[in-house]
Amino acid sequence: MDNRKYYLKLLEQELMNDKILEKIRNLKYYLLSDEEKRLINIYLKDKRLINYKKSFIKIFINRLKKLNDDRFLYYYSNLIKVCPLNIELNLKNGVVKNIDLNMPVNTSKVTGKPESYSKDIYFTNLIESNDYENLYKYYDLETIEKNSNIRGMKWQ
Image (cartoon, rainbow, N blue to C red; front, side):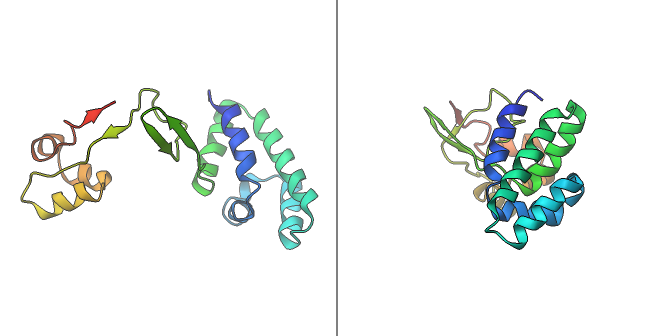
């Protein structure tokens, strides 16, 4: 994974958040080594013991650095579910939030507002609520292009 160092640096910062630590312990405990489990449990029982938290983070991040690509991808795909990175990228055309590191490089910001030209109320609601998952699930691309301005929107 090309962005491994970048992701690990951001993950290290996110692990300072106690809620994220609790989610990892409660939902992704199987990803932790015995020592990491011990450290995280001690810290979460008594949050004044900040050194245990720091030790957990250091050991966990160092272990992730050493994983082969396949194993790292497995950890990444599990951790991103409980630790979505709150990243903001300031671009000349606007701010991109919650970046997915697998996002294509040529991704651009869309200007304008999606509009529906259809009399189909459900279609219009999907467009207005930006529910593209269901839009593409229930309507084909030809219908979407014909009844909305999604494809004709200005890309920067």
